[in-house]
Image (cartoon, rainbow, N blue to C red; front, top):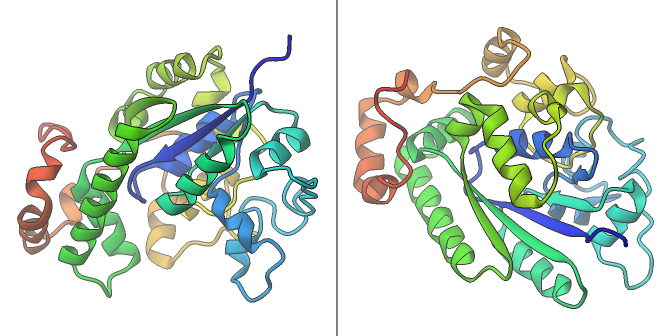
Length: 276
């Protein structure tokens, strides 16, 4: 009997480690990590930046996304199962309108649906976003984080399938036991490559440049770093390391703004102050 197809959505706020989790999942021989699958809407659209419309690791000539070839009436995930030969597809899109549309589409066929709610200390998320988008204030980033978390909590409460909550900090500090839990949730055996995804070939759309730099081992194609992030990732070991830069980078003013906007909400997501 053919094993069931599954679609796995990674929910939560951006800058919470979803690229890392997705690549770890995609290292399993039964799983294809699509990346931010909503960017499939931009395939072939030359009005969009290259990084938004091609595979981030191999570029326009990607054997999966280069010529997707969706059959009439076939949804994106069914196409990816057919093209990759893998029965589980992971989508890390954070746009919840997209997620809702895909869930409606998937309700028309017999497929298992899963949600992994990936959570990270909101202060770490704001620090990461300030690094990438310094033109916006800490307060604005905190408001965005809080809104996305509340919306994802609401999705988890009504999700038409199974839900697992995973902490980024646990994933990065204890990769193997965390991925064993995730594998059990998805009904597959743990594969050692899940804790060493850089040993596998993958084809994600979108996602974090720094994590993908570590996956490739170099820059190239559409994986490019800023001078600031190049210093950090260039000195980063080839492996999974807990990122707690926010503890030294987030200013007192930014922390105060965050606490005012989202401090109460973050109590459920805060990572122990004893961590270094």
